[in-house]
Amino acid sequence: MSGVDTGMSRAVRAYPVFIAKGRGACGDADPDLFTGYGDRGQNRRKREAVAKAVCAGCPFRLECRRWATDTLQQGIWGGTDETERAMARHHGGFLDERLAAARRAA
Image 1 (cartoon, one colour):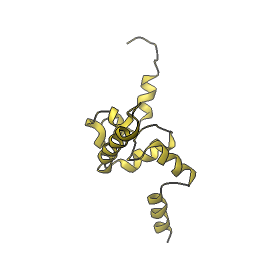
Image 2: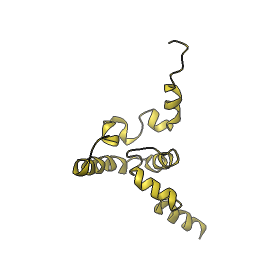
Image 3: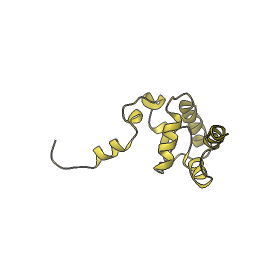
Image 4: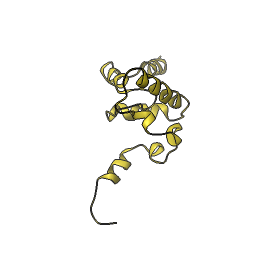
């Protein structure tokens, strides 16, 4: 390898370990399932529903969702899309996380 830093190593390190090592439920899935750039309408909704179903059974779903929210990722991460994550940032977090925090505080 040449001494030139392409930035790729930094980008990979930026991912949580479970993603970088393919440990999540998405590890064997086609990455296009989670991004689908250019999809519109019904095709996009169907693809996103399948991607979210993959995420639903993942033991890293909450950590993945938190990372994607904090780093402003596009596409499906942790069972959420960018609009859902933007709303959570605006409203102080995801409802399930706020409810869990309220239960712990009670």
